[in-house]
Length: 187
Image (cartoon, rainbow, N blue to C red; front, top):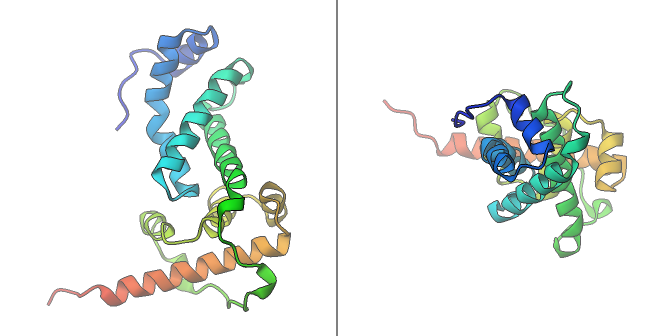
């Protein structure tokens, strides 16, 4: 639950635009939970997410003069957090263990079970996905980017974006089936 500000969001943003540090801190505290939630959709490690969120707020405070008040602040902040998470992934790409897409076998169509999951179930299951699969899934299914846009954002071929999405859905289905198998219904 978010803490009451005592002033309107618009006034808070105006005070941040004037460079008042006290109000930058209030803005940070007010939107911290939201930014963490967005970051956790893209990165599994909480320390990495915290770094991304802090970097995002630094970007927000540097660019707040250019924020257009006719748009929702949350949408602007979300875009900054998403882009910062993607940049973080790119920066650390050389440390990740990735399998070449051409060496991978074919993965079938995603099962209908994935389509019937609740948002909470999907977010919980997404913690089991490899980072690249999670990013493609988020960008396509949650944020509504096309495969062409995802390819440009992540610097991967469009076909790879489609394959990673298919794999993510297939893994989510498998994880879901494993959870259902482990669930014992009360008598």
